[in-house]
Length: 373
Image (cartoon, rainbow, N blue to C red; front, side):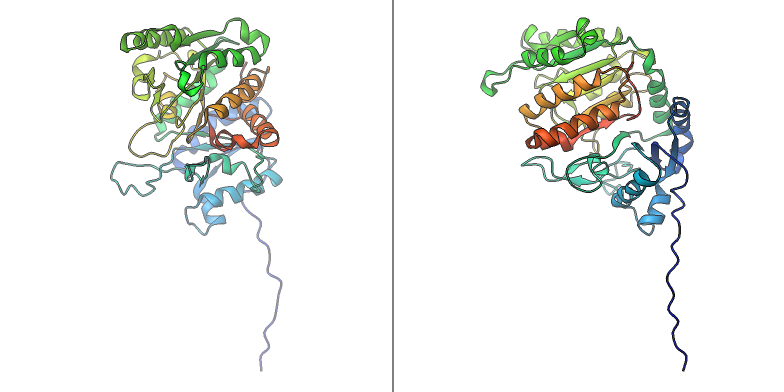
């Protein structure tokens, strides 16, 4: 009678893990050629860099099923076998993966969802791609380009590559009006942040504080005009501290995402990095509207070259602490955006884990390997 023969199964090498990739881009096929100029620029700086088709990741890690956990499994291996430090997710996402609402939703690189706050249990968390063993500490610097078209990608890459030509060490801060009932004096707290910047960044810091303008539509319009003029004059970093929603800065609507195209200049050399310390500006998965992160980055030649914004609700104390930690690291000479965020999150996870809303929710929209001058 025939006897079964037992053999040890052969292990098949992962075809995605050859070579080295300190900077690893993950993109749908239609964006792979468009991201190459950025990868080539980083190679010229000495980083190894490559792009991987997100569908190839699904084929190898989830049997062809679209699953963000497959991306994280791949990144775990990429970190150990490719030496990956920086991860660039190329493409937007939406919770309406299959466009059931008929709004033309596009989900190119799906995110992972999780808890960020006592009342927010299901927020988009690109942070989870960086926390590879679920211990709260991130091991990778992750950024996302929330683009939906080849044209949007091209404009954003142009802005990223042109950004070093922006005025070095120039920073502009906008702040919400003080609210005694909340115990919040935003302008005073921004001054604390400015005093924590590297000295050469402090010298020319510009300010647009709503406290300095009359309450009401005329005062807010004047503040908005001053904000626009200062941005278009050329800033390396633009910060906002105060209340926010997915589409608005401040309760008085200092700035709305739909206004950015009209308000901002069209010179790529003025494309700043934006840091928003407030709620919801990085909630990038809504199919019904463009958030502040979309408005800043997907504005053609206008807008920003990168942005930090939270994907969920944040507490005032959390925003204040993250602003202090991130901004002082962001102004260290030669720092890469992703390293500034990674080091800030690692520090807070060690020293102040109660600020989990910003530790998990603050998201980088941009290239994590991009340097500030």
